[in-house]
Image (cartoon, rainbow, N blue to C red; front, side):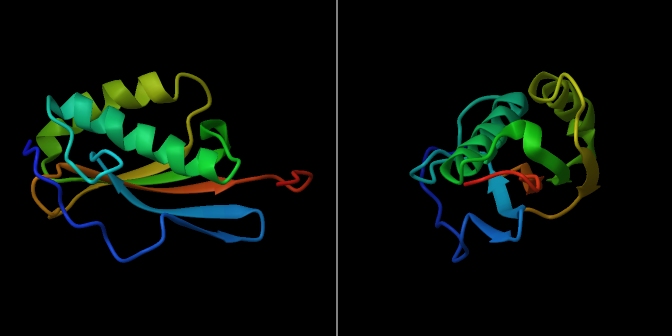
Length: 123
């Protein structure tokens, strides 16, 4: 991975509709949009740290995620992705779809997330 910052997308990190949060695609970059250095697993972990950060900024949590759509640049990384997925969601994982897609280099993974805040929840 390059340590040079990339341009942040011109989209909000998330939008809320009723009790549902829709997160924009999260990639393996830090808060300054510098791609994480290291292995593919390191990149996946950064993606989910970013997801958690966006959720927390909205008063939400990982356990409220109901669906994840994941894009992999290379399906050869699928096994390693699943290993990190099991770390992030050891119990009651959300539904998900995983597809191979062309991603903006140097990123090898992007994840879109939908979280449901529940009917009785006050934010």
